[in-house]
Amino acid sequence: MQNWIDAYSWINIRFLLQGLGITILISVISVVLSFIFGSILGIIRYAKIPYFSRIIGFIIDVVRNLPLLLIIFFTYFGLPAFGFKPDTIPAAILAMTFFESMMIAEIIRSGILAVDIGQMEAARAQGMKLGQAMWHVILPQAYKKMIPALVSQFISLIKDTSLATIIVVPELMQHGQVVYGQNPNYIIPVFVIMAVMYFVVCYALSLLSKYIDSRMA
Amino acid sequence: MIKLLVDNWSSFISGFGWTVLSSIVALFFSLIIGSLFAILEVMPSKVARVIGNVYVEIFRNIPLLVITMFFYLVIPLYVVKINGFTAGTIGLTIYTSAFIAETVRSGINSVDIGQMEASRAQGMTFWQAMRYIVLPQAFKLVIPPLGNQFINLVKNSSVLAFVAGFDLMYQGNAIASTTFETVNTYIVVGLFYLVITLPISYYMQHLERKLA
Image (tube, helix red, strand yellow):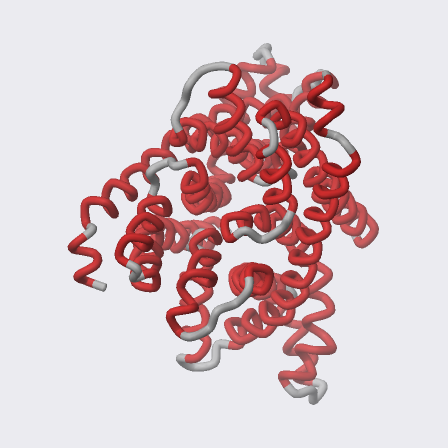
C-alpha cells in the first residue's frame, strides 16, 4: 500500500501529467497536419488523374501497410543520412504526420466514394467546375460521413504516440518509464495510472464521436 | 542494399519468422477470445453484456505498448519468468482480441434478428443458435475487416522490438546498429513487412468489392 502512496506523490503525478500534455500536443499537431495532407492525397487518389493518382495510390497503400514504429525509426535514425537531423519531438510529429496522412487519405477517399455520384453529376450539370463541386457539394457531405472513422483514427494516433518513447520523446509512456525506473515497486501503480490517463482521453473521444454520430443521424 | 540483405540474410529471416509466428499465434488466440467477448456483448444477460463491454472498451483505449510492457515487466517480477517474445505475444493477443470482439459483434448484429428468433423457436438453446446459425453467417460478413485486423496485428507485432522479442524490427535495429547502414536496413525491414501485409490488403480490398 505504501508503494502506491509513494508512487502517486504529487511530483510523480505532475511529471506524468506533463508527459500526457506532450502526448496530446504531438497528437493534435499531427492530426491537424495529417488531416490537411490526407485530404489532398485522398482527393488526388479519388480524382483518377492519369499515372499521378496511381502513383499516389500505390504510395498510400505501401505506407499504410508498414508499421508506424519502422517509420519513426526511419525518421529519427535514417533521415540524418540525408543531412536532415530532426529533434525528437519534431521527428515524432513528422513520422506520425507522414503515416497518418496516408491513413486519413484512405478514409477521405472512401468518404467521397460514399457520396452519391448523382450529387457530383448534378453539381457539374449546374455549371460548377470540378473543384467547386468538390468544395461546395461533395466534401461537406463526405466529411459528415467520415466523422466516426476520423475520430477513431485520432484515437489510435493518441495511442500510437506511445511508440515515440523509443526515440526518447518526453511523452506519457517515457515519463512513466522514468518514474518506475526509480523503484521496481512503482511498476504496477505507474502502469495503472498511465493506463487510466490514456483511457480517459481516448474513451472521452470515442463517446464524443458516438454523440456526434447520433446527433447527425 | 542487396549486399546488406545477403550478408544478414539469416538475421532477417529469423526475425521474419518470429514476426510471422507471433502474429499467427496472437491471431489464433485473439480470434477465440474476441469471439467469446463478442458473444458476451450480445447475450440476453445484462451482466454478461457489461463484462463484454468493459473488456472491449478498456483494451481498445489503452496503447498496445502499455499492455505489452506491463506483461513484460510485471509477470516475471511476480509470477513466472517469461521472455520478451511470450510477453509481447500475450500483449498483442489481448489488445487485438478487443478489436476482434468489436468486429465480430458488428457482424453478429448485422445478421437478421429473425435468424436467432427462428432458431430459438425451433427449440435451440442460445448457444446452439449462436454456434450453428448466427456465427457462421456473421463470420462470412466480417472476413474483410478481420483481414484488416490481421494486417494491423502484423504491423503491431513490431512492438516486440521494445521487449527484445527477436522479431523483424528488433533484428533490423540490431543490424542497423552494427552495419551503420540505417537507411538500407530499414528499407529491407519495410519490404519484409510488405511481403506479408500488402498481398493481404489487396486481397481484402478485392473481397470487399466482391461482397459489396
